[in-house]
Image (cartoon, rainbow, N blue to C red; front, top):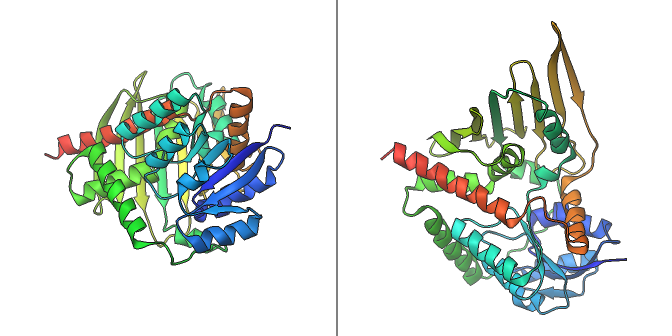
Length: 358
């Protein structure tokens, strides 16, 4: 039995809701050896909950343990820890986003290449069985004319309150300030000096809409160019037009509707006589499928089918895939090079906006 000795850095919401329960369930594939969080009370609480004896507040102490791999799911940026983990000879799974700037991406990829270890980024939507099914249906469309993305994002707390999440107020102030400084430096490295509303746009792109950017890349590759980008509501709503090979256009919108509970993230692909659409659940959902709708014509008669492939959790599937990559040398579906393309696109979207609004 090839069990991976795993350490986790960051014991917050996404670790509590998704990663730690799945690692526990996948005990034939993973042994959870150590936990790290800057909150001593939280790491001790989660250590008790999952019966993990090694509990530290400094990631360097975690990397000193006898580990095969680490999962990074703490506040961005994660670059410093990712590079250190790879240099320490650990396989690395980074919960999205991999980083903030393209320069950071290059540093992480360089460390992965030098170490020869697996680097995988947590774009769980590409592992979603619904997305994989939709991908096969989109490949059947001979004349794609329009791609449309709508991402309606409520306040996360509307969904987080459905879970028993554990938080403590013992994070040292110097750690909070250090994280702010690192993030500000990474944002400046990525997009330079820009107004506050543009910084908010960039935060939405790299933090939330990066999911849409990644599934678009997984389905169509990287766009040839950014046609346009518009923002309003002080950067809380963004619409962009992306041009893809073969004269395809994608209209993508992200908007923050904080008081609306109904999270809605859809991807629709239209041909002259065909349509494929998928609706993704919130990342905090466990067991919710991603329904796919396929429409077409049988001669002059329209037809429509709605498909739910299965209820496998995409977070769990990507952990299974990570194990396969380490044990069997499989190439990650969502590797560092792919994530770099996504961050380059985020940068280029901001550049297009700034050039149009100088």
